[in-house]
Figure (cartoon, rainbow, N blue to C red):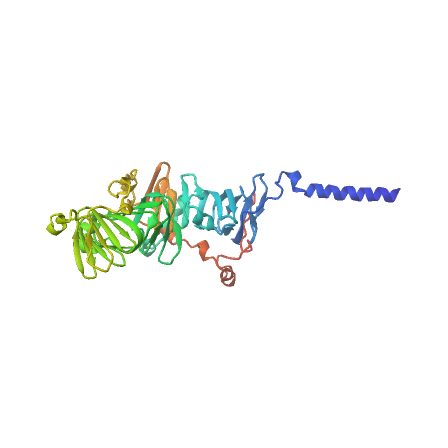
Length: 469
């Protein structure tokens, strides 16, 4: 009888311990999937779940949805999300994984992060690359739309002013924008391949760079406005590469250059300041012909033959045996054929004037670059302001890709400032972001950190503060 009672007592005790340890009885959700993990931790970084429980973040710790991550005053961490997004959280930062859904088998997902305090450096993963609208970062000042990119975001208080005061004049010198054009209008899927063959999806306001190749899908088109106000419309199933672009002095004066090569399909072009001030510097090329301009608007379609339709001004149509003036109807030879604006050239003989525009070149009227309504976007596409970097607020610097905040778009080596209802692009990158000593997540090298003791030891071993609350 005593033995039976002892067994009962032991069983009851073990059951009590099991029930006490059971997460379902403590308000935790069963079978929660991790949304990411920590790659590196320096100092004291705490994590607080929705139900108020806290833990210290360690190397390779799991990260879950709705968790708040807080870094200490001399601490930072590098996180990696399930889609490959990497995020460095700077010291004195509060960050929340507000929403995270990733379907690896479909390559689709949606994420919203909250930056409540401090700063982050991020490298977007597959989610942002596959869907330009999939990822956002919410701050107390504004929401950032992240479109496949590498960027820094920092909420400055007095700390940024203190850093600025310590910088030398050399450190205050930062690079200028690499953006030469932006998307004014887009319909359907348009992809871009850069000079390194990296591919990205375009979105309204998205940046265009020298060397970019634009590719439109079936039933898609895009209108691009360049810094000199040259406008380019690319029709469906077309491909064009920006071979050369140089603005010259004072917005296009002097030796400005604009050269595009139409690889297939069709485009419409309206010249800006470069074509008006340096006509010899403006060219549209196919494999069989070159179109030089005289201040004009024209269409080109290439599928060998090359077809050209001039709807404003005139062009010099250059081919292997000579050149032809197209769009200047005072020419008696052109006038005698019944037209002088439309030319067809197959490379085997002289170009031929056509009386009627081929059906495949008949574009909808709203795709002419001079007719497109930009909803005011073109008025602020390239505007930038001088700024006092000691001013508190949200600073965002883009190193690659595209970030949008309240209709202000930034591309490579561009920055913006936002506070309250005021958001504008900056003429210079904030020095405290360009010279940030904390590593970009794409440059993370765990072995290098450990070998040379950079930023202390991982896993919190080098920190003396504890901030779990």
